[in-house]
Image 1 (cartoon, helix red, strand yellow):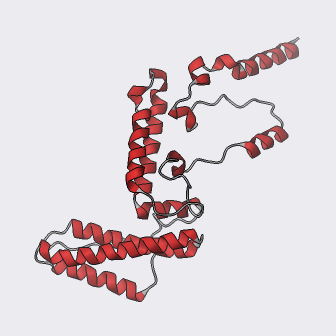
Image 2 (cartoon, helix red, strand yellow; image 1 turned 45 degrees about the horizontal axis):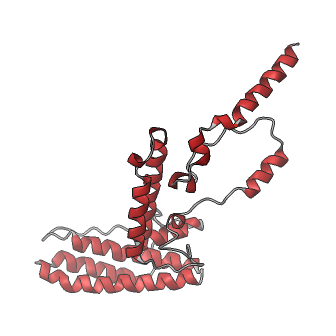
Image 3 (cartoon, helix red, strand yellow; image 1 turned 90 degrees about the vertical axis):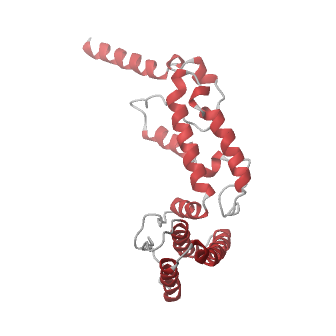
Length: 241
């Protein structure tokens, strides 16, 4: 009797988990940005599920979404090497603003506001990453298992490059006015453009070693750009690697 009761209770519990009534009509039928990007609650996994069934579902599960998937209009080809490394930033910003307007929590009913906040945060992160060539390169490498954004050991072992960086730092520290920085800013912008072109070539060829080295190089130039922007007379220049 106890065994039969236990079995019946188990079947009832499973049925309650998987019943269509577990989701509201809005959750089942809404075609909003939240559903499009798969941020919605999932029913608890069924117990007593066989290993074979679990493996089958795992094989057919959609791949993890990348930042590129949020912007099909401005980045239709997707991430490199299928698509180019460079991005039309004006088109990206336009699509970003459209997405944010649709994902704004005030545009959704109370029960969906938490999901809307989560979606808005993901869109912000994706846009912030993709609009910056340095963050974009670091992100693409991280997708391939290569971490350079927070790797203190990821440095360019190039004596000429390091000498150029040190000389530029000294010139910034010795500057007496904003006018002294004009030439250095132009030189550094040229360096940045050169690194971006090198990254375009590296990712197009799927040459990850070249892309990693150039991403580290670009990080030096971006640090110099920040130092030039934050210059104050007599203030020491600290370049983070």
